[in-house]
Image 1: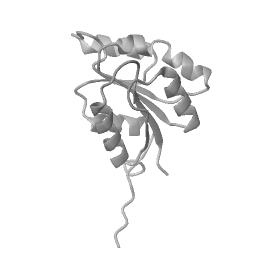
Image 2: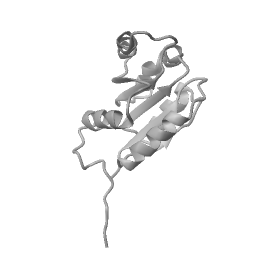
Image 3: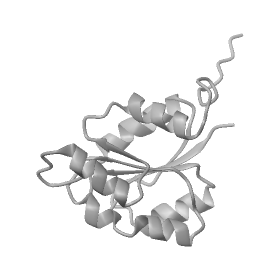
Length: 146
């Protein structure tokens, strides 16, 4: 049975290419992806995670204002009784010179994994498999030859 993940671009960000690529990669890896699209509010992420019984929430942001868009995000998840791995990735801060500082800020905000805009989707998928304790083939689609 495929594992369901929620994916979207938070806040006022309208960059769609990254989540489209990630959605395709996650689907090819056997995950059920609920793509919320762009300009997604925190409430929409929380609602989707709850209604789809999601096992992870992946937040994208490329316009550099993720910190303000994600402020209080984990409080909202907790209030809804949602305790799943959360990932954030993209160009998270305007003029980010040292990504390790950015990673630390988002980790302190409660995100389990923080990725920069150059991260290969396979790296995020491998982390997701580890965090969900999936075997190598458990998340992969089953091929039937016949």
